[in-house]
Image: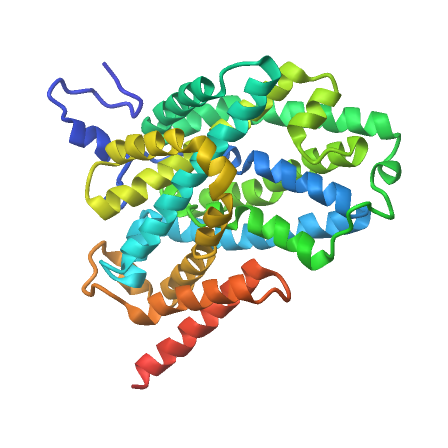
Length: 419
């Protein structure tokens, strides 16, 4: 009998060989995806419910021209950043954790893997609660039971790996897109025109710097895990194109869906907007698929990171991370979002240093082996970047952290070379 990859399944094939199809501990040698498969995986990742809520806040805080500028500039930056990571992932065939090993050292990479594994597990738990709490309240269901059911189902699809991400994306992306644009149509019909929809004098005005911080900060942490997915792409053009479309076009769609509803109905939460539009069932479908598609990718990234730390199988670590995220879901939603955001401040510097180090030392990435345990000249800039991003409030914090990390990395490299 032929399996998904077109090969004959062997009766004695071990579980280890099945796990190897995800290449958690090595560069990708097969299981390649074409452009369309990569596109639905990446768009499914960026179809993120909090992005619509973030768009809702922009809709309440910006006029039309400001909104257009903010979403175009913010998502253009994300597209460039993730596009670089997409190229590196595809060109090397390595996931983010293997790339981190070359950049930060064998042991130093554990910092990157730990931060990514914890944050993605945490956001998985938050995502489960984001669906379960409003749905349970609307239908008067037991929220804890719904959390357990949804957490189990989301973990199950994540465990199936890159194949499941592709299949789920094919189902989720078109449905969310159609519903989103129908919601935009209803919002436009209610307001009469775009000028009526977006007030020239917003009730909760935002500065452009704050608006850009919302757009960029909303998904830069998740975007850093791009190599985990694009390493499966058949070619660099497909990887970069799918990623840029997802993080530019897909993200803009999310912000438009959220902003138009908020501007027309005065509610930043897309679930509330869809209810007011008489779309209760589609709202639940949209919220569920939206969160599910993102949670699949988040837990997949978490499983890879934790597998590289513990040297266990990815599927086992995905199940453990999913169980922890599910059991702590409501607690994480109510109390831990701030801490997750703080931990996430470490992730953009990690991604930016990997990008710069790759283009400076490409030969190091031709092998999965690394000769050093700690590369302090690459590790220290992570903390410098995170500190700058958290402490300095002038400008755009995510960009501040990236710039600080890159500058400090280049200075330390110069010192190292001229020592």
